[in-house]
Length: 134
Ligand code: THU
Image (tube, rainbow, N blue to C red):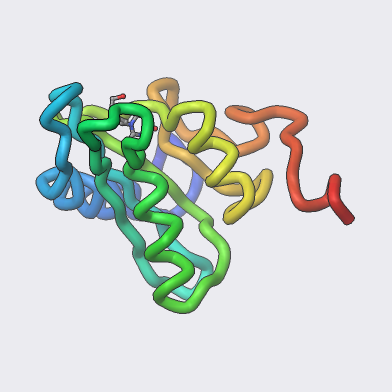
């Protein structure tokens, strides 16, 4: 996968972290487990899994846990991201989670998507963000 991104980055290693995270998912209602992993600009790797609820609407996406872990372990900026389903297949972050990722990684965050490595700007073009509130 590194060759596909044109960069010397261990995408498969990051995906392995997401595959570990998905084993902790709590998805008894949708039966759709998600694991997410991201590299932080200081070299940390943060992860998350989805956590559903009997009140369906308050389910937490995997990215929510990942962003919380980012902040609780020291903050920083996300530089690389991937999420997978329970079959270890790369999936796309939902629209709400693209917004979460944009806030914490900006337009240059790289994502392994179903159609290859893309920037945040490509998967959430013309995003509303912190600059709009400046
Ligand atoms: N889900 C995530 O965790 N992240 C996404 O980006 C897409 C959807 C979860 C939410 C819910 O628990 C399950 O996948 C089915 O929608």
